[in-house]
Image (tube, rainbow, N blue to C red):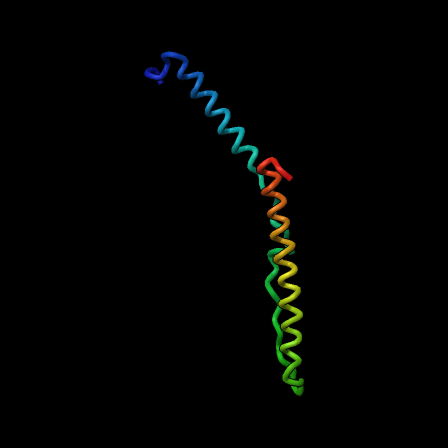
Length: 87
């Protein structure tokens, strides 16, 4: 770094390195909730069950899955907004 020691370049480089370090240290995302990692459930047809039974159960599962995805997305969106300095 002997070539960079003229005109305060070392101080500028140190200041830039400090700023980059502070910005990287500020990037600390929260842990992703375990609730968001759970796989979607399965619907297994039962013996002597009406044909529409599994379809109705699957629709309930799908609705619950959509609610979970929506909650997880809002969780990540809230963190991202806070990380950007807004709410």
